Amino acid sequence: MRIFGLAGWSGSGKTTLVVKLIPELVGRGYRVSTLKHAHHEFDIDQPGKDSYEHRRAGATEVMVSSLNRWALMHEHRGAPEPSIAELLPRLSPVDLLLVEGFKREGHDKIEVHRPSVGKPLLCRDDPKVVAVASDVPLGNLPVPRLDLDDVAAIADFILDRCGLARAAP
Image 1 (cartoon, helix red, strand yellow):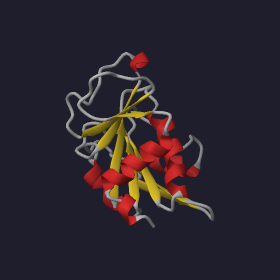
Image 2 (cartoon, one colour; image 1 turned 45 degrees about the vertical axis):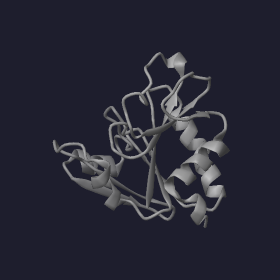
Image 3 (tube, rainbow, N blue to C red; image 1 turned 90 degrees about the vertical axis):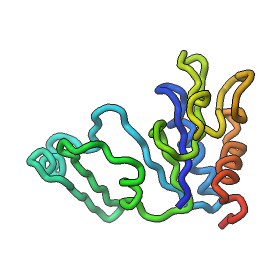
Image 4 (cartoon, one colour; image 1 turned 120 degrees about the vertical axis):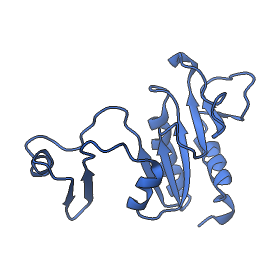
């Protein structure tokens, strides 16, 4: 499974880009999964639902299954946050795993950057940032700049960088 990331500061447009990249890549015949990092406590379950009550009662893992999907929720219960390497074995094999966030991990990534967010470029300090996708020209960069609105070109860049362009399904 090839892994490629999209990193950037909150509000830069990472999720918007991922949501546009998925149908572009799937439409080309690739099987794609995503891994999203959340910085804050989050919950995908709702109070009052049976699965929520199971977790609240102390279960380490709760799996919910139906005709259409299944989901596994795992509580760390004080254990450290797992790395991508520790999470990967829990995912089914696909052609490409798009990672949103996890900007400190060691996989190749495109930085999604909007100067209007008011945050510094990551590419100047992270050698794993191999390109910057931005909505405006940025001047002198240590990596290529991609147009944030050209999803097809960004998909081409990712596939080429991962060696998947030559192994199209």
